[in-house]
Length: 433
Image 1 (spheres, rainbow, N blue to C red):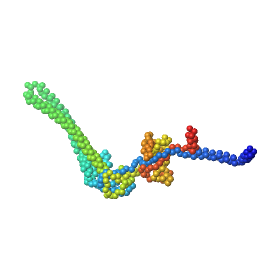
Image 2 (image 1 turned 90 degrees about the vertical axis):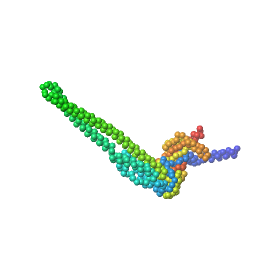
Image 3 (image 1 turned 135 degrees about the horizontal axis):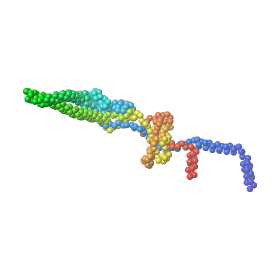
Image 4 (image 1 turned 90 degrees about the horizontal axis):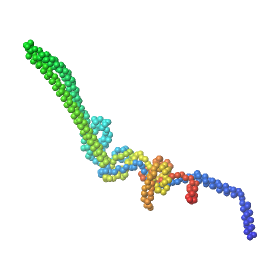
C-alpha cells in the first residue's frame, strides 16, 4: 500500500511538472491541421462523373462505291486520297461508249434550261456525230426532236398562214366598206328612178304620144338600179361570209398550231427525259462517280485495266467537310445525373490520352428511352447520348487527331464538380441514415 502510494505521488509529481509549452504546441497543431483540412476540403473539388463507351462518327459517313458490272477498270483518278468534286468520274468499266463524249453530253443535258436558252443556240451545242455506245438511239431521237422544234420555229408556217389570212380579212373589210358606199349611191339612184317612174305613170297617156316607150324606159332604169343594189348586197353578204370563213380558218389554225407545238414539246421533253434516264442508267452501270465533294480512298489494291467483279466495293468517298460528333452508350446506373450541356472528357483507345491528351465536348441530347445492349457477361439497359465536339478532334495537348470512322474510347461525363468536404458529409449523412 505504501509502495502504491509512493508511485501515485511520483506520477502526480510528473504530471504536475509536465511542460506547458509542448501542450500548447500540440493544441495549436491540431487546430491548424483541422483548419487546413476544412480549407482544402472546401477548395478542392472532385468531379462527379458517369462513364460510358463512346464511338466517334461523322454526320456524312464514308460512301462506298460498288461495281455494278463486270469488266476491266479504266482509272481516271490515279492516286488514293485525291480530291474529287461532286459528279466527277473516278473510274469507268470499259464499254463501247466514248467517255469524253458521254461526259460532254451528260454535262450538256444537266445544264439544259428550255425556258432561258434559245432552241437554236441549244441545237448548236449538241454535235451530230458522237459515240455513246448503247444509248446512241436515245441521243439521236432527242437530237431529231430538237431539230424538229428548231425547224418549226424557224419556218414559222402557222404564223405566216395566220398573217396571210388576217391580211385577207382586212382587205375584205375594206371591200365591204367600199361596197357599202356603192350601195348607198345605188339606193339613191334607185329612189330617183322610182320617183321618175311614178311621175310618168301618173301622167295622162293620151296627151303623150311616146308614153309607153318612155314609161318602159323609166321602168328599165328603175329595175337596173334595183339590180345594182341587189348585186351590191349579194357582194357584201358574200364578202362577210368569206370573212367569217377566214375567222374560222384562223381558229382552226390556232388549234392546229397549239396541237403541233404540244406534240413537238412532248416529243422533245420525252426524248430529253429518256436520254437523261439512260445516261443515269449508263453511269450507274459503268461509272464510279463521286456523289459529293471529298477525297477518294482505294478500298483494295487496284491498277488501270484491272478486272473487277460486280458487287465489289472498289472506292470510298470521304466527305471534304464533315461534322464530327460522339455517340455514348451510357448504362442506366447514374444516368439520371446527366443533363444537356454536361461536360464530357473523351479518351480514345487509338490515341492513349497520357500521350495525346483527351478531347473535350458536351452533351447535346439524351434519348428518352433505353436500348438493350448485350455483352459477354450480361444484358444491360443503356441510353444513347449524343456528344458535340466543338473543337473537333483537337486534344488538350493541342494535338489534332486523324479522323477514322467508329473510333472507340471512353467518355467521362462530368455531372457536377463537388467539394471534397461535401463528399465527406455525404458519407456521414449516409451513415447516419
